[in-house]
Structure formats: structure tokens, C-alpha cells
View 1 (tube, rainbow, N blue to C red):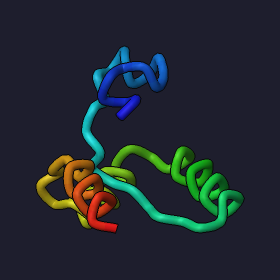
View 2 (spheres, rainbow, N blue to C red):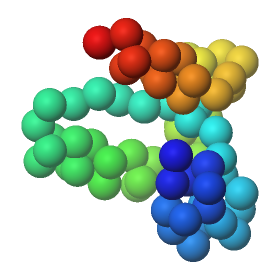
View 3 (cartoon, one colour):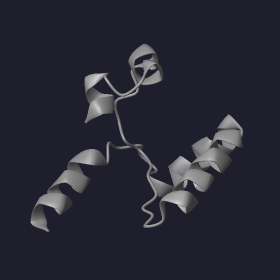
View 4 (cartoon, rainbow, N blue to C red):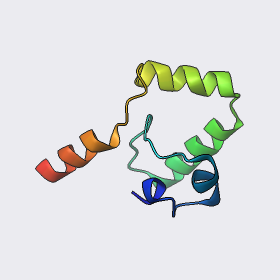
Length: 72
């Protein structure tokens, strides 16, 4: 929600990044951080391909996650 509201970071505010189109769930924080750092090194084409495989239409995934969270 912070990204949506533009309070998460300067990057999200500057580039108006407000949709969640890809995520990876992880139970180990160290592994999650390592994965994020690794993905940041990827070139843009690889990132776009990863997102497109996960969410071909690039729909905002947050509403579905919020609904699933409320059902738990």
C-alpha cells in the first residue's frame, strides 16, 4: 500500500510505480534479500520476461492478495 500511496520510496514516487505485477513469497528473510539483490543485477529484458511468465497481462496482483489475506 505504501507504494500505491507514493510514500514507499523516491523511486516509486518519481516513476509512479503503483502496480504489483510480480512477487515471490519467501519465509527466510536472508534468502529473500539475496534474491532481490540478484534480480536487481539482471538486465531489463530478463526482468520483463520473468514478469511476463508470471503475469502475462501485467494485471495488478495486490487486490487478489488482499482478498486471500482477508480469507485467512
